[in-house]
Length: 496
Image (cartoon, rainbow, N blue to C red):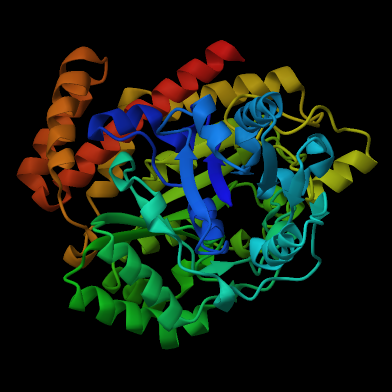
Protein backbone atom coordinates (compact mmCIF):
# COMPACT_ATOMS: atom_id res chain seq x y z
CA UNK A 1 0.00 0.00 0.00
CA UNK A 2 0.88 3.64 -0.43
CA UNK A 3 -0.03 5.56 2.73
CA UNK A 4 0.15 9.32 3.06
CA UNK A 5 0.15 10.52 6.67
CA UNK A 6 -1.20 14.06 6.94
CA UNK A 7 -1.03 16.35 9.97
CA UNK A 8 -3.50 19.28 9.77
CA UNK A 9 -2.48 22.88 10.30
CA UNK A 10 -2.64 24.68 13.61
CA UNK A 11 -4.18 28.14 13.70
CA UNK A 12 -1.96 30.79 15.30
CA UNK A 13 -2.20 30.02 19.02
CA UNK A 14 -0.40 30.68 22.29
CA UNK A 15 1.46 27.34 22.25
CA UNK A 16 2.01 27.39 18.49
CA UNK A 17 4.85 29.92 18.97
CA UNK A 18 4.41 30.94 15.33
CA UNK A 19 5.73 34.47 15.83
CA UNK A 20 8.68 33.26 17.93
CA UNK A 21 9.64 30.56 15.42
CA UNK A 22 10.49 33.19 12.82
CA UNK A 23 13.43 34.26 14.98
CA UNK A 24 14.98 30.77 14.73
CA UNK A 25 13.95 30.21 11.09
CA UNK A 26 11.68 27.26 11.92
CA UNK A 27 8.21 26.41 10.65
CA UNK A 28 6.74 24.59 13.68
CA UNK A 29 7.55 23.85 17.30
CA UNK A 30 7.09 20.07 17.25
CA UNK A 31 6.72 17.34 14.62
CA UNK A 32 3.63 15.06 14.57
CA UNK A 33 4.94 12.38 16.95
CA UNK A 34 1.66 10.46 16.90
CA UNK A 35 1.68 10.02 13.12
CA UNK A 36 5.38 9.09 13.08
CA UNK A 37 4.62 6.42 15.68
CA UNK A 38 1.50 5.18 13.89
CA UNK A 39 3.48 4.93 10.66
CA UNK A 40 5.81 2.46 12.38
CA UNK A 41 2.80 0.22 13.15
CA UNK A 42 2.12 -0.38 9.46
CA UNK A 43 4.00 -3.09 7.52
CA UNK A 44 7.57 -2.23 6.52
CA UNK A 45 6.90 -2.92 2.86
CA UNK A 46 4.17 -0.27 2.69
CA UNK A 47 5.25 2.95 1.00
CA UNK A 48 4.93 5.80 3.48
CA UNK A 49 5.11 9.57 3.22
CA UNK A 50 4.27 12.21 5.82
CA UNK A 51 3.19 15.79 5.20
CA UNK A 52 2.80 18.19 8.10
CA UNK A 53 0.72 21.14 6.88
CA UNK A 54 2.45 23.33 9.46
CA UNK A 55 5.73 23.05 7.54
CA UNK A 56 4.76 22.06 3.98
CA UNK A 57 1.95 22.37 1.44
CA UNK A 58 -0.32 19.48 0.53
CA UNK A 59 -0.74 19.15 -3.23
CA UNK A 60 -3.35 17.19 -5.12
CA UNK A 61 -0.62 15.01 -6.61
CA UNK A 62 0.37 13.99 -3.06
CA UNK A 63 -3.17 12.86 -2.34
CA UNK A 64 -3.55 11.07 -5.68
CA UNK A 65 -0.29 9.16 -5.03
CA UNK A 66 -1.82 7.51 -1.97
CA UNK A 67 -4.05 4.48 -1.63
CA UNK A 68 -5.02 5.82 1.79
CA UNK A 69 -4.62 9.21 3.44
CA UNK A 70 -4.32 8.90 7.21
CA UNK A 71 -5.09 11.98 9.32
CA UNK A 72 -4.47 12.58 13.01
CA UNK A 73 -5.78 15.72 14.67
CA UNK A 74 -6.50 17.56 17.89
CA UNK A 75 -9.58 19.72 18.40
CA UNK A 76 -7.79 22.97 17.60
CA UNK A 77 -6.91 21.56 14.14
CA UNK A 78 -10.55 20.78 13.28
CA UNK A 79 -10.93 23.25 10.41
CA UNK A 80 -7.77 22.11 8.65
CA UNK A 81 -8.65 18.44 9.19
CA UNK A 82 -12.05 18.99 7.60
CA UNK A 83 -10.42 20.66 4.59
CA UNK A 84 -8.10 17.68 4.06
CA UNK A 85 -10.98 15.21 4.30
CA UNK A 86 -13.06 17.21 1.82
CA UNK A 87 -10.14 17.37 -0.64
CA UNK A 88 -9.70 13.61 -0.42
CA UNK A 89 -13.40 13.06 -1.03
CA UNK A 90 -13.34 15.32 -4.08
CA UNK A 91 -10.40 13.35 -5.51
CA UNK A 92 -11.83 9.94 -4.63
CA UNK A 93 -9.03 9.08 -2.20
CA UNK A 94 -9.79 6.81 0.78
CA UNK A 95 -9.41 8.41 4.21
CA UNK A 96 -8.43 7.01 7.60
CA UNK A 97 -8.57 9.18 10.73
CA UNK A 98 -7.62 8.91 14.38
CA UNK A 99 -6.41 10.95 17.34
CA UNK A 100 -8.13 13.06 20.02
CA UNK A 101 -10.45 15.02 17.70
CA UNK A 102 -11.94 11.97 16.02
CA UNK A 103 -12.07 9.91 19.21
CA UNK A 104 -13.95 12.70 21.02
CA UNK A 105 -16.49 13.40 18.28
CA UNK A 106 -16.61 10.62 15.67
CA UNK A 107 -20.19 11.57 14.79
CA UNK A 108 -18.87 14.78 13.20
CA UNK A 109 -16.72 12.80 10.75
CA UNK A 110 -18.97 10.00 9.56
CA UNK A 111 -17.82 10.66 5.98
CA UNK A 112 -14.31 9.42 6.81
CA UNK A 113 -13.90 5.93 5.31
CA UNK A 114 -12.26 4.40 8.39
CA UNK A 115 -12.21 5.85 11.90
CA UNK A 116 -9.51 4.39 14.16
CA UNK A 117 -10.58 5.62 17.58
CA UNK A 118 -8.84 5.43 20.96
CA UNK A 119 -5.24 4.22 21.05
CA UNK A 120 -3.59 3.09 17.82
CA UNK A 121 -1.77 0.15 19.42
CA UNK A 122 -5.21 -1.44 19.94
CA UNK A 123 -7.12 -0.48 16.80
CA UNK A 124 -4.52 -0.30 14.02
CA UNK A 125 -3.57 -4.04 14.02
CA UNK A 126 -7.23 -5.01 13.56
CA UNK A 127 -7.64 -2.45 10.78
CA UNK A 128 -4.54 -3.72 8.94
CA UNK A 129 -5.71 -7.34 9.26
CA UNK A 130 -9.19 -6.55 7.94
CA UNK A 131 -7.82 -4.32 5.18
CA UNK A 132 -5.65 -7.15 3.88
CA UNK A 133 -8.67 -9.44 3.94
CA UNK A 134 -10.74 -6.89 2.02
CA UNK A 135 -13.27 -6.35 4.80
CA UNK A 136 -12.15 -3.23 6.65
CA UNK A 137 -14.82 -1.73 8.92
CA UNK A 138 -15.96 1.87 9.14
CA UNK A 139 -15.16 2.27 12.87
CA UNK A 140 -12.56 0.61 15.08
CA UNK A 141 -12.65 1.29 18.80
CA UNK A 142 -11.60 -0.26 22.09
CA UNK A 143 -12.48 0.08 25.76
CA UNK A 144 -9.07 -1.25 26.81
CA UNK A 145 -5.83 0.63 27.54
CA UNK A 146 -2.78 -0.04 25.40
CA UNK A 147 0.41 -1.61 26.74
CA UNK A 148 3.00 1.05 25.91
CA UNK A 149 5.73 -1.57 25.95
CA UNK A 150 4.35 -2.58 22.54
CA UNK A 151 4.63 0.93 21.08
CA UNK A 152 7.20 1.06 18.26
CA UNK A 153 9.97 3.61 17.80
CA UNK A 154 8.68 6.54 15.69
CA UNK A 155 9.73 6.57 12.03
CA UNK A 156 11.97 9.63 12.27
CA UNK A 157 12.99 9.21 8.63
CA UNK A 158 9.56 10.60 7.69
CA UNK A 159 10.26 13.84 9.60
CA UNK A 160 12.17 16.77 8.11
CA UNK A 161 13.81 17.75 11.39
CA UNK A 162 15.31 21.00 10.20
CA UNK A 163 11.80 22.48 9.94
CA UNK A 164 11.17 22.15 13.71
CA UNK A 165 12.54 23.91 16.77
CA UNK A 166 12.10 20.93 19.12
CA UNK A 167 11.66 17.17 18.81
CA UNK A 168 9.31 15.17 21.01
CA UNK A 169 9.01 11.78 22.66
CA UNK A 170 6.50 9.97 24.88
CA UNK A 171 7.26 7.99 28.01
CA UNK A 172 3.82 7.63 29.62
CA UNK A 173 0.09 8.17 29.10
CA UNK A 174 -2.59 8.95 31.66
CA UNK A 175 -2.72 11.01 34.84
CA UNK A 176 -3.38 10.02 38.48
CA UNK A 177 -5.49 13.14 39.01
CA UNK A 178 -8.97 13.83 37.71
CA UNK A 179 -9.50 17.55 37.06
CA UNK A 180 -13.06 17.97 35.80
CA UNK A 181 -12.20 20.26 32.84
CA UNK A 182 -9.50 17.95 31.46
CA UNK A 183 -10.14 15.11 29.00
CA UNK A 184 -6.82 13.32 29.58
CA UNK A 185 -8.31 10.63 31.82
CA UNK A 186 -11.20 9.96 29.42
CA UNK A 187 -8.73 9.57 26.54
CA UNK A 188 -5.84 7.83 28.33
CA UNK A 189 -7.00 6.67 31.75
CA UNK A 190 -6.52 7.44 35.42
CA UNK A 191 -3.58 5.10 36.01
CA UNK A 192 -0.34 6.22 34.31
CA UNK A 193 1.06 3.62 31.89
CA UNK A 194 4.73 3.79 31.03
CA UNK A 195 7.30 2.42 28.65
CA UNK A 196 10.19 0.36 29.97
CA UNK A 197 13.51 2.12 30.49
CA UNK A 198 15.40 0.20 27.75
CA UNK A 199 12.58 1.04 25.35
CA UNK A 200 12.77 4.74 26.24
CA UNK A 201 16.54 4.78 25.78
CA UNK A 202 16.13 3.01 22.45
CA UNK A 203 13.82 5.81 21.28
CA UNK A 204 16.22 8.49 22.49
CA UNK A 205 19.09 6.70 20.76
CA UNK A 206 17.10 6.59 17.50
CA UNK A 207 16.52 10.34 17.82
CA UNK A 208 20.21 10.90 18.59
CA UNK A 209 21.30 8.77 15.62
CA UNK A 210 18.93 10.69 13.35
CA UNK A 211 21.24 13.66 13.95
CA UNK A 212 19.03 15.71 16.25
CA UNK A 213 20.66 17.96 18.87
CA UNK A 214 18.64 20.36 20.96
CA UNK A 215 15.30 20.46 22.77
CA UNK A 216 13.21 17.33 23.29
CA UNK A 217 9.69 17.58 24.70
CA UNK A 218 8.36 14.66 26.75
CA UNK A 219 4.71 14.97 25.74
CA UNK A 220 3.41 13.00 28.73
CA UNK A 221 0.18 14.23 30.30
CA UNK A 222 1.94 14.12 33.68
CA UNK A 223 5.57 13.00 33.54
CA UNK A 224 5.70 12.37 37.31
CA UNK A 225 2.54 10.26 37.42
CA UNK A 226 4.67 7.30 38.60
CA UNK A 227 7.33 8.90 40.80
CA UNK A 228 8.76 5.67 42.15
CA UNK A 229 9.61 4.27 38.73
CA UNK A 230 11.20 7.57 37.71
CA UNK A 231 13.42 7.76 40.79
CA UNK A 232 14.37 4.09 40.99
CA UNK A 233 14.73 3.21 37.33
CA UNK A 234 14.14 5.75 34.56
CA UNK A 235 16.02 8.84 35.71
CA UNK A 236 19.20 7.04 36.83
CA UNK A 237 19.41 5.40 33.40
CA UNK A 238 18.65 8.68 31.67
CA UNK A 239 21.33 10.49 33.68
CA UNK A 240 23.91 7.92 32.58
CA UNK A 241 22.75 7.99 28.94
CA UNK A 242 22.93 11.77 28.74
CA UNK A 243 26.41 11.86 30.27
CA UNK A 244 27.61 9.15 27.89
CA UNK A 245 26.30 11.11 24.89
CA UNK A 246 27.68 14.42 26.20
CA UNK A 247 24.26 15.99 26.83
CA UNK A 248 22.88 16.30 23.29
CA UNK A 249 19.35 17.18 24.42
CA UNK A 250 17.59 19.62 26.74
CA UNK A 251 14.33 18.15 28.03
CA UNK A 252 11.02 19.80 28.86
CA UNK A 253 7.78 18.19 30.00
CA UNK A 254 4.46 18.57 31.83
CA UNK A 255 4.07 17.84 35.54
CA UNK A 256 1.69 18.49 38.41
CA UNK A 257 2.54 20.99 41.15
CA UNK A 258 3.36 18.23 43.65
CA UNK A 259 6.73 17.97 41.92
CA UNK A 260 7.68 20.74 44.36
CA UNK A 261 7.26 18.30 47.26
CA UNK A 262 10.08 16.04 46.13
CA UNK A 263 13.56 17.56 46.20
CA UNK A 264 15.19 14.31 45.11
CA UNK A 265 12.95 13.99 42.05
CA UNK A 266 13.57 17.59 41.00
CA UNK A 267 17.31 17.18 41.44
CA UNK A 268 17.37 14.00 39.38
CA UNK A 269 15.29 15.55 36.61
CA UNK A 270 17.69 18.49 36.34
CA UNK A 271 20.71 16.17 36.39
CA UNK A 272 19.07 14.14 33.60
CA UNK A 273 18.81 17.25 31.42
CA UNK A 274 15.35 18.69 32.15
CA UNK A 275 15.22 22.48 32.25
CA UNK A 276 11.53 23.37 31.85
CA UNK A 277 8.21 22.06 33.17
CA UNK A 278 4.67 23.11 32.34
CA UNK A 279 2.42 23.06 35.41
CA UNK A 280 -1.35 23.44 35.52
CA UNK A 281 -1.88 25.94 38.35
CA UNK A 282 -5.30 27.11 37.12
CA UNK A 283 -6.29 29.47 39.94
CA UNK A 284 -5.19 31.11 43.20
CA UNK A 285 -8.83 30.77 44.31
CA UNK A 286 -9.16 27.78 46.68
CA UNK A 287 -12.90 27.44 46.10
CA UNK A 288 -12.35 27.27 42.33
CA UNK A 289 -9.68 24.60 42.78
CA UNK A 290 -12.15 22.59 44.87
CA UNK A 291 -14.85 23.13 42.24
CA UNK A 292 -12.72 21.62 39.45
CA UNK A 293 -11.32 18.82 41.65
CA UNK A 294 -7.76 20.15 41.40
CA UNK A 295 -6.91 18.40 44.66
CA UNK A 296 -3.13 18.46 44.15
CA UNK A 297 -3.18 22.28 44.11
CA UNK A 298 -5.30 22.78 47.21
CA UNK A 299 -4.07 23.70 50.69
CA UNK A 300 -0.61 24.75 49.60
CA UNK A 301 1.32 27.94 49.05
CA UNK A 302 1.32 27.83 45.25
CA UNK A 303 3.85 30.62 44.82
CA UNK A 304 6.24 28.91 47.25
CA UNK A 305 5.79 25.66 45.30
CA UNK A 306 6.64 27.45 42.03
CA UNK A 307 9.71 29.05 43.62
CA UNK A 308 10.93 25.66 44.87
CA UNK A 309 10.73 24.22 41.36
CA UNK A 310 12.49 27.27 39.92
CA UNK A 311 15.25 27.13 42.54
CA UNK A 312 15.89 23.48 41.67
CA UNK A 313 16.96 24.56 38.17
CA UNK A 314 13.64 24.12 36.35
CA UNK A 315 11.88 26.95 34.58
CA UNK A 316 8.12 26.90 35.19
CA UNK A 317 5.62 27.55 32.43
CA UNK A 318 2.06 27.44 33.70
CA UNK A 319 -1.59 27.35 32.73
CA UNK A 320 -4.30 29.42 34.40
CA UNK A 321 -8.08 29.49 33.95
CA UNK A 322 -10.76 32.08 34.68
CA UNK A 323 -14.49 31.51 34.46
CA UNK A 324 -15.11 28.95 37.20
CA UNK A 325 -18.49 29.18 38.91
CA UNK A 326 -16.72 30.20 42.13
CA UNK A 327 -14.79 33.03 40.48
CA UNK A 328 -15.96 36.56 41.20
CA UNK A 329 -14.64 39.89 39.99
CA UNK A 330 -11.71 39.79 42.45
CA UNK A 331 -10.14 36.93 40.45
CA UNK A 332 -8.74 39.28 37.80
CA UNK A 333 -6.48 41.26 40.14
CA UNK A 334 -5.56 38.24 42.26
CA UNK A 335 -4.48 36.29 39.16
CA UNK A 336 -2.40 39.21 37.86
CA UNK A 337 -0.72 39.56 41.26
CA UNK A 338 -0.04 35.83 41.48
CA UNK A 339 1.56 35.66 38.04
CA UNK A 340 3.75 38.70 38.67
CA UNK A 341 4.93 37.50 42.08
CA UNK A 342 5.66 33.99 40.85
CA UNK A 343 7.98 35.09 38.06
CA UNK A 344 6.25 32.76 35.58
CA UNK A 345 7.03 34.41 32.24
CA UNK A 346 5.13 31.94 30.04
CA UNK A 347 1.78 32.16 31.81
CA UNK A 348 -1.05 30.89 29.62
CA UNK A 349 -4.33 32.33 30.89
CA UNK A 350 -7.45 30.98 29.23
CA UNK A 351 -11.20 31.17 29.61
CA UNK A 352 -12.75 27.98 30.97
CA UNK A 353 -14.15 25.63 28.33
CA UNK A 354 -15.68 22.19 28.55
CA UNK A 355 -14.23 19.62 26.11
CA UNK A 356 -16.35 16.57 25.30
CA UNK A 357 -15.70 13.59 27.53
CA UNK A 358 -14.98 15.66 30.64
CA UNK A 359 -16.94 15.72 33.90
CA UNK A 360 -17.38 19.45 33.40
CA UNK A 361 -19.04 18.84 30.02
CA UNK A 362 -21.42 16.32 31.58
CA UNK A 363 -22.32 18.64 34.47
CA UNK A 364 -22.94 21.66 32.25
CA UNK A 365 -24.99 19.56 29.83
CA UNK A 366 -27.15 18.45 32.75
CA UNK A 367 -27.59 22.07 33.82
CA UNK A 368 -28.53 23.16 30.30
CA UNK A 369 -25.59 25.57 30.10
CA UNK A 370 -23.68 24.18 27.10
CA UNK A 371 -23.38 26.30 23.97
CA UNK A 372 -21.38 25.68 20.79
CA UNK A 373 -18.56 23.18 20.48
CA UNK A 374 -15.11 23.74 21.98
CA UNK A 375 -12.68 25.38 19.53
CA UNK A 376 -9.69 23.69 21.16
CA UNK A 377 -8.07 27.05 21.87
CA UNK A 378 -8.92 28.48 25.28
CA UNK A 379 -7.08 31.74 24.57
CA UNK A 380 -9.29 32.86 21.66
CA UNK A 381 -11.77 34.64 23.97
CA UNK A 382 -14.48 32.02 23.33
CA UNK A 383 -16.46 29.86 25.78
CA UNK A 384 -18.71 26.91 25.02
CA UNK A 385 -21.01 27.33 28.01
CA UNK A 386 -22.93 29.98 29.96
CA UNK A 387 -20.78 31.16 32.89
CA UNK A 388 -22.16 32.11 36.31
CA UNK A 389 -20.42 35.50 36.17
CA UNK A 390 -21.89 37.99 33.73
CA UNK A 391 -20.30 37.02 30.43
CA UNK A 392 -19.41 40.56 29.39
CA UNK A 393 -17.81 41.22 32.78
CA UNK A 394 -15.84 37.98 32.55
CA UNK A 395 -14.54 38.62 29.05
CA UNK A 396 -13.59 42.21 29.90
CA UNK A 397 -11.76 40.98 32.98
CA UNK A 398 -9.97 38.36 30.92
CA UNK A 399 -8.91 41.06 28.43
CA UNK A 400 -7.51 43.06 31.35
CA UNK A 401 -5.50 40.09 32.63
CA UNK A 402 -3.77 39.31 29.34
CA UNK A 403 -3.31 42.97 28.42
CA UNK A 404 -1.63 43.53 31.78
CA UNK A 405 0.61 40.48 32.11
CA UNK A 406 1.87 40.77 28.52
CA UNK A 407 2.35 44.52 28.50
CA UNK A 408 6.09 45.12 28.06
CA UNK A 409 6.70 46.61 31.50
CA UNK A 410 4.89 43.86 33.44
CA UNK A 411 6.23 41.02 31.28
CA UNK A 412 9.88 42.09 31.52
CA UNK A 413 9.36 42.83 35.21
CA UNK A 414 8.54 39.20 35.94
CA UNK A 415 11.34 37.89 33.71
CA UNK A 416 13.65 39.73 36.10
CA UNK A 417 11.85 38.30 39.13
CA UNK A 418 12.53 34.83 37.74
CA UNK A 419 16.07 35.27 36.42
CA UNK A 420 17.37 36.94 39.57
CA UNK A 421 16.85 33.66 41.42
CA UNK A 422 17.22 31.05 38.70
CA UNK A 423 20.40 28.99 38.46
CA UNK A 424 20.50 26.85 35.30
CA UNK A 425 22.47 23.63 35.45
CA UNK A 426 25.00 23.22 32.64
CA UNK A 427 23.81 19.69 31.77
CA UNK A 428 20.26 20.93 31.15
CA UNK A 429 20.88 23.99 29.00
CA UNK A 430 21.36 22.15 25.70
CA UNK A 431 23.71 23.05 22.86
CA UNK A 432 23.75 26.56 21.35
CA UNK A 433 23.17 26.43 17.58
CA UNK A 434 23.74 28.89 14.74
CA UNK A 435 19.97 29.50 14.68
CA UNK A 436 20.09 30.59 18.31
CA UNK A 437 22.83 33.11 17.51
CA UNK A 438 20.85 34.43 14.56
CA UNK A 439 17.75 34.66 16.78
CA UNK A 440 19.64 37.02 19.08
CA UNK A 441 20.58 39.32 16.21
CA UNK A 442 17.01 39.25 14.89
CA UNK A 443 15.72 40.08 18.36
CA UNK A 444 18.02 43.11 18.55
CA UNK A 445 16.41 44.48 15.39
CA UNK A 446 12.79 43.50 16.01
CA UNK A 447 12.56 43.93 19.78
CA UNK A 448 15.42 46.34 20.36
CA UNK A 449 14.61 48.81 17.59
CA UNK A 450 11.21 48.30 15.93
CA UNK A 451 8.89 47.25 18.76
CA UNK A 452 7.51 49.26 21.66
CA UNK A 453 9.27 47.15 24.31
CA UNK A 454 12.73 48.21 23.17
CA UNK A 455 13.80 49.99 26.37
CA UNK A 456 12.71 47.03 28.51
CA UNK A 457 14.45 44.65 26.13
CA UNK A 458 17.80 46.46 26.30
CA UNK A 459 17.56 46.83 30.05
CA UNK A 460 17.15 43.03 30.36
CA UNK A 461 19.91 42.29 27.85
CA UNK A 462 22.47 44.49 29.58
CA UNK A 463 21.42 43.35 33.05
CA UNK A 464 21.85 39.67 32.11
CA UNK A 465 25.19 40.25 30.38
CA UNK A 466 26.61 42.14 33.36
CA UNK A 467 24.88 40.57 36.36
CA UNK A 468 23.88 37.03 35.31
CA UNK A 469 25.66 36.00 32.08
CA UNK A 470 24.71 32.36 32.66
CA UNK A 471 21.04 33.24 32.04
CA UNK A 472 21.68 35.47 29.02
CA UNK A 473 20.46 32.90 26.42
CA UNK A 474 17.27 32.40 28.42
CA UNK A 475 16.75 36.16 28.72
CA UNK A 476 16.82 36.41 24.93
CA UNK A 477 14.47 33.42 24.56
CA UNK A 478 11.92 34.81 27.03
CA UNK A 479 12.03 38.21 25.32
CA UNK A 480 11.12 36.51 22.03
CA UNK A 481 8.37 34.50 23.75
CA UNK A 482 6.86 37.71 25.08
CA UNK A 483 6.67 39.17 21.59
CA UNK A 484 4.80 36.06 20.41
CA UNK A 485 2.38 36.11 23.35
CA UNK A 486 1.52 39.77 22.82
CA UNK A 487 0.91 39.27 19.11
CA UNK A 488 -1.35 36.26 19.75
CA UNK A 489 -3.53 38.07 22.26
CA UNK A 490 -3.66 41.29 20.25
CA UNK A 491 -4.87 39.38 17.19
CA UNK A 492 -7.31 37.24 19.17
CA UNK A 493 -8.81 40.35 20.75
CA UNK A 494 -9.34 41.91 17.32
CA UNK A 495 -11.06 38.77 16.04
CA UNK A 496 -13.25 38.16 19.11
